[in-house]
Each structure stands twice: as C-alpha cells, then as structure tokens.
Length: 163
Image (cartoon, rainbow, N blue to C red):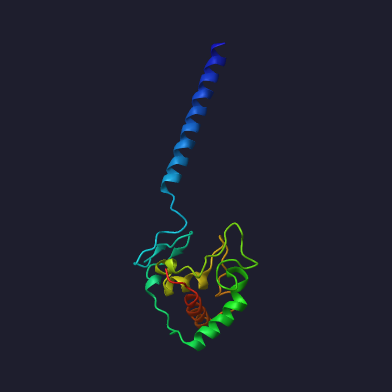
C-alpha cells in the first residue's frame, strides 16, 4: 500500500512539474514574441529581422538601387511584375492575387507606411532570395536577372500610396 501511495505521489509531482514547466515556457514564448510588422521607423533595418519573419543580412538595407526610376523602367517593371508577381501580389499589388495564400497573404505593396522597413536593398534581398514560409519564390532561381529584380522594385515603389 505504501508503495502504491509513493508511486502516486511521485507521479503527481512529476505531472505538476511538467505542467508548470510547460506553462512557464509558453509564457516566456509569448512575452518574447514580436508583432508581425514592426512599427514604422525612419531608420531602415540594418540586419536581422524585418517583419513577418524575414531575416535580412547586415548592410542590405543600405544597398541602393543601381537603376533610376523613369517611365521606361516603370513600364518594364510593370511587365515583369505582371508575368512574375501579380499571381500572388495581385494586379494592383495589394496582396490579393489568385495564388495568394489566404492564411498568409503577401504584403500590400501599396502601403506607403511600410517604406521605412523596406528600402531598396531589403526589397531586393526578399525578391532575390525568397523564403519557404510564408512562401515567396526566390527569383534568382526563377529566371530573373538582378537588373530585372531592380526594375520590378522601381515599379513596386511606384505603387506605394503616401503614408
């Protein structure tokens, strides 16, 4: 009888310890979580997280576009966007394309308040390298040249509405 009682007490203690540990781990996880989008800042990200799980390398935010905007560049970027990006980002860049994941839609490229978090170099990194989740194709593997990616960036920036 004493052995059964000792086993039951030990099991109860182990259960409570595991439960306490799980609750503490969950609390610590929630306390350290960031919101999906960081508040707008005048300082571009210099490396690390750039909202919605992106990890951007140091210095990427300071990389300027080698292509200046012009009507010709914007027109070419629009054509590339139509062929490669519109299916997810939508015709107007609002993240509502037919292939967009409804649970994790692409970003609204018309949202001017996001410009501070997405300077040219950050946009290039995201488009060029992509990621698995939420899905963004790596266009370095999808047949676009670096020049074409920079051209699409100029078009995407033209979609931004004032913040």
